[in-house]
Length: 103
Image (tube, rainbow, N blue to C red; front, side):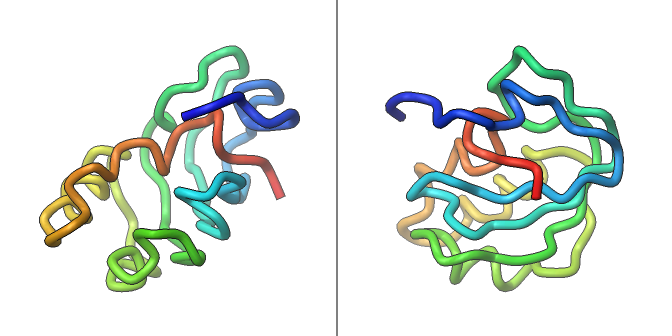
């Protein structure tokens, strides 16, 4: 995945209600609103429920667009939906804190 950009949620954490935006090629422009606090120090998937606000412009945007405005209980819930599409089986890191920044 490469080096973690500075200022990501992995570094800053995020409060409940924060809007997070993708900052890497694989999740560029993706926006989600998280419902739980996102602790700093962990670059893994966002914790808890969230809403998909914008699909962005990444490789998987065309599949994410189908779910804009929907709420999900976990990151895996959305990832499972995306991976059902042909060519999207490798979609795994779009909701990781090391590739999202608070906007």
